Image 1 (tube, rainbow, N blue to C red):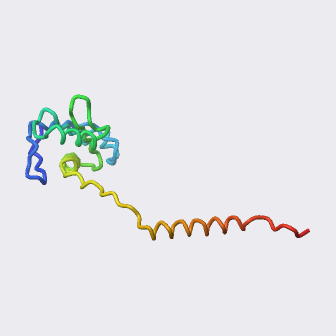
Image 2 (cartoon, rainbow, N blue to C red):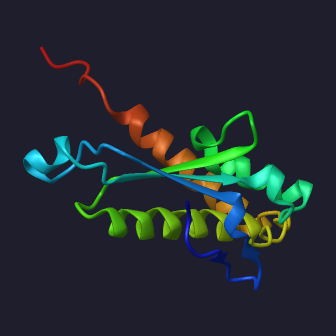
Image 3 (cartoon, rainbow, N blue to C red):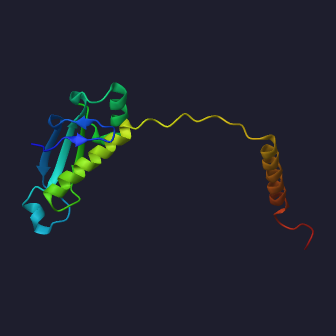
Length: 145
């Protein structure tokens, strides 16, 4: 049903048997051709069954996939941007590879907590009181009739 395995940037490969493609009718460009030919692609990755990912990687993958993840442990990508079936197939595979690469990327380092300097705190408070004074001086002028 599917062609080649997906190669990832980390040197890993998603096996061919873990990918299931089905072709459905598209609602995108194509004129009357849309009603006759199934050009849209629905690409399913059997993520849990593939055995390629660790539990932590699976959690990140499903979190990034959002509504594209199913309860059965699959990720469904639909591609119908192009008029040709083959271009939609390549688009779906590229989008899936991009999603997997983002999930497998190492998390950013934790943020180091820092404290503002005493000078910056004093400058902030001084500017705050100056703004308060300006606002206090606004308003109706008293004493003129």
